[in-house]
Length: 544
Image (cartoon, rainbow, N blue to C red):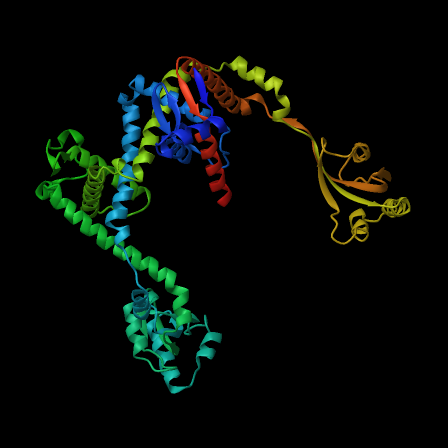
């Protein structure tokens, strides 16, 4: 039974106000109870929380709380059927809880503790971004060529410009490039060289990768606020990552102690990634409070890491990635455990989100267990749908046309020039008004009847129509391209049709099931509370 509680009349309200010594909150219409389902009350706040989590982009606030009531009926039915005990439900909820708890743990123990002051940003700028050096980098194949050029540069018998012009010649420089360097993008060796050079000075030839370089310092620039502003955001990101690492390591160190983590280092050292599974010892490699990781479990992770490294071309250094896998397992286990132990699901603001998620998962579990088994789509149904809706899978013929309009005399003259051998497109472009388009694409369905008649007489690309009347003027068209009508074969669209039919049947099954639940339920809606809540939600939407 579905009952709407209507507000009292104004006369009745005045009567109660006059005679009642109680507070206004006693009045029935001021109650925050929005709906009552089988004796259980749900408040306006309950609806708001549901709407916040259930709403999808573009959804409008419903006219009535009926969608919410339907959702309540379904999740309560899931509870009655004890669907929260199914492995699939428990796994989904636990994965969600672990992920969200980990995010909140990271915020509490890492992100919320990171503070970056302007002074820190400026000091990092001074350390890593200044001085700025404008440098000529002169490259050579070998030290012999570099030494010869260095002597000439010092003696003044050759200039950098001349070396640049001669670049690539035998015994000369490979290349001469000018660029700006900062401490942040300059290796320590270069920094020492540049700091020791005077303006226009040359460094001694120095080996670099597969060649030899001479550096010439052109100019040096110091710190300034405009330059700092360009790098401030990037510096902030670097400092954030550094502090993030520091706080994460501190957290992990505390968790190692809290959960009494022990690693069998001797066993770890002996483990060989190539050892057959049957030959692995039945021991634990990691132990901690209320949990352990066996050698077999560890080796599964280790082999997965090896496959990944080989697939992406990393060197196969097992002694290194054994430690990486070990640290990864411990870090993930500890942070997950710590997040769950904090029980964020019982505290605001996550408690309401978690409540919605667990209830909505019951609705989804109900749909999977009760509704979906009733939804069957046959090949015959798919074919029938295809035949009845063939236009949905058909594409009309399309035409790419050059279209020009004008007076009858103008169009006749253009047609004559074209028939005399003139290029229609060239002639037409000269007559098209400024800003107007000459080339248009039409489908057969949206084409003007006059154009359609004219195009019907064009056999091949390049053909030009006769002059014809169009929208109070006269026109000519030239056929530039034509794509005939076609229809997608059933084989191409059968999966799409099947999904649509399943969705339609699922809606029908759901509606029938809800009809039975409503008939067996006592539902009351406080219309006064609903109207006030709906107005409030609409006002919030308008402010966005």
